[in-house]
Length: 165
Image (cartoon, rainbow, N blue to C red; front, side):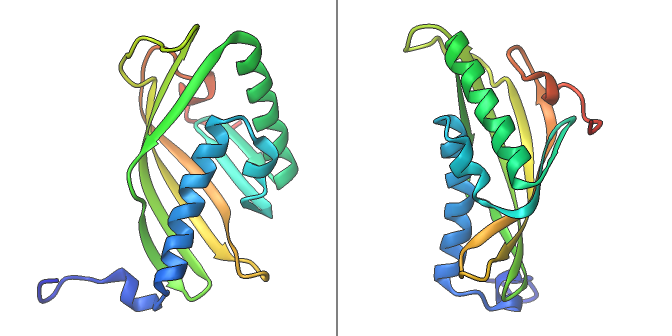
């Protein structure tokens, strides 16, 4: 690191184990969302956690699970396949039990028999996360907000509008 550069990680002194756990939390959410496990994805949030996807704002673990389960059922019924592609999130340590993360996500979507034709991403957004360590020592989302940057063919309706409902 060059002289004068800011090291956000050093300010909070999170261990490598904690940083890895936060990276895994972010990756696990997308994996579960892509593979239709709404209950387990919702369990990655604190009880009062919020999930905002464009114009859609969900409050509480139950509301998040209900949305993700309904989304999975609709996708299974229509043959829609969605994959979220992201890089490693940038983590800013707030304290030894709180952090924030930012990552850019490209969403690919289509319907039909696999393999589907490759197209441009349906949506590109930044996830902005507030994360805290729970009493059991696991990291969970307090809030997860998708700031939509680009939409294209196949974008979900909630991604096309940015005003929360």
